[in-house]
Amino acid sequence: MKSENLIKELFIPDEKRALEVFRKIRWSNGVCCPKCGSNHVHKRGFVGKTEIRRYLCNNCGKSFTDYTGTIFARRKMPMGEMLYILMNLDKKSIKRLSEELNHKWDSVYSLAKEFREDITEKSDDPLFNESIEIDEMYQNAGSKGIKKKNREQED
Image (cartoon, rainbow, N blue to C red; front, side):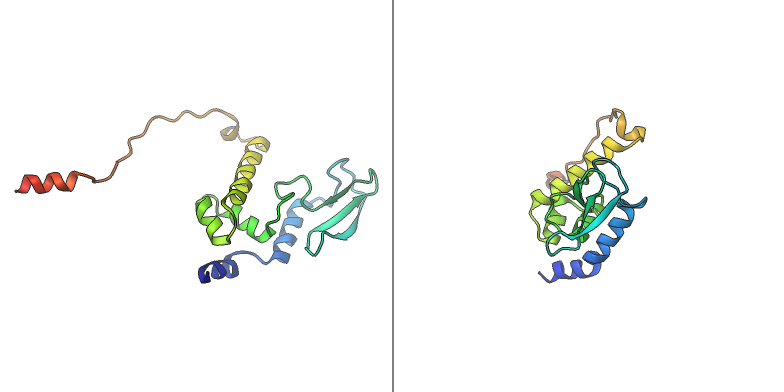
């Protein structure tokens, strides 16, 4: 339990700061409606007791949030923890991330899966768009039985 708290304190961004960074990236060209693309929107407060901002489009009347149309929509996880998961996908297993953050394995897995699928769909990089052929590989099964053979030969 102490290691989980230490990880959260040291490595997971503060929720308010994480949302500020997310907004700067998401709305780098200004807030626009995900439905019609209009920049004529105004702020309508926050979602519940969170720092997630709600907007209303003056053009089409659609209400939306910072998360609408992203992989973060409909997730109950804090933004800081979601960013931590995405930044550590290549370094840690889903199981380890779920244990560190005290979330269900399914929640972490679905975020990671959606993130990977989103990258491959929206990328222009040919590495993500073409089939890749991989040759077979020999995997050493360890030294099981080798030590026993060596002892028998010595006797």
